Length: 156
Image (cartoon, rainbow, N blue to C red):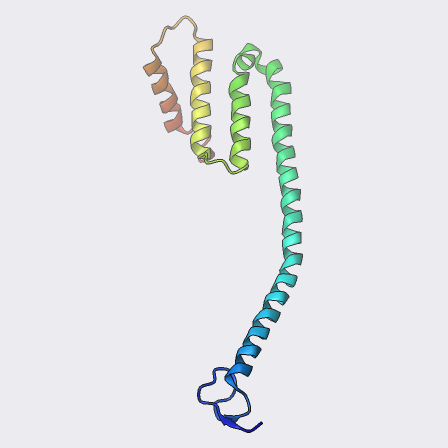
């Protein structure tokens, strides 16, 4: 082998060198393959750790959601009687929507909660004031007013 002018080279020195374009290409390909392997190997540990953390968080969150629903179903009938039992489906539907949202369904959480509270307020108002025969548009207005008042502040 003899020294060549290396002006056309990208990696090796561009002066006189024994490095050829083919050698450079082989070096680049090998370096690329080694880097990919090293990245893949090192990212497996991180990927496994993240997957474990995700499973742990998911289990914890599902547990909290299930406990919350069970506690509501256990305590509200005694505390609110028929006000709750006649509206239990609204609460079950809310928990179903919360689960769908958590699993990635295309739901807007704030709207979902606002609709729940508006529907619940309408139903409770009808139950508490059965003597009043109010038109649906009045009850819709009642729900919208409650939403505008934001009884829970910035919380949805």
